[in-house]
Image 1 (cartoon, rainbow, N blue to C red):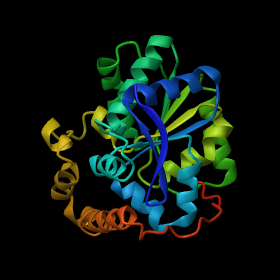
Image 2: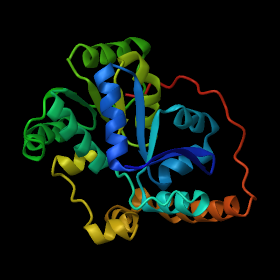
Image 3: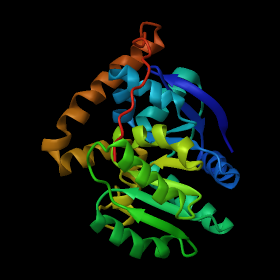
Length: 265
């Protein structure tokens, strides 16, 4: 098990952990009924924090941030000598946590995405995690909610009997939700990105060699170039250049900023 604490990648604090350590920390918080904000960050997530000082403060306030992308893991190893052998990928972490939760009888709530995706997820998850206890599911409204609407969402999750909440709202909305709601829900809140679509069977995960080579972004870009071209063709080179500057001591993050309430749902 590897759990070597947080290291800074372009001012964003990422945990040097493996799946065992990440899962153990989440399950421990679930057992204790503790608020515990979690995100799995790829390059896009890190660069969102680089470009938005408020959001970087949110990310750095989360209890656990795992290196979702291979380039983030490579950067951690190169900059800090963390010697991580693998990334901690959001979709796989979702299943690892669900399996560990099922073994302890801890119920899981799924918040985000669309009703159609959740319907598929409800049917397919028991095949992937046979003993899973699904406390509830609720689709995203894909908007900014009023305080009363957020209170209603939080009450639904709290009263469902859930011990863990998985959130699939897309980056950075899901990280904002985890930051703003983990404590009020008194449970781990995991921002897990595309895990809902993958485990619902609506999107195919890249092959193992594509994932190991860090080329998952290329497959996603090929599948949706109009939406994703900027994320990958602009942010990826900027990430590489900034990591090199950090390595030679020429990178300085922008000053931190106090986060304002956003209320994504």
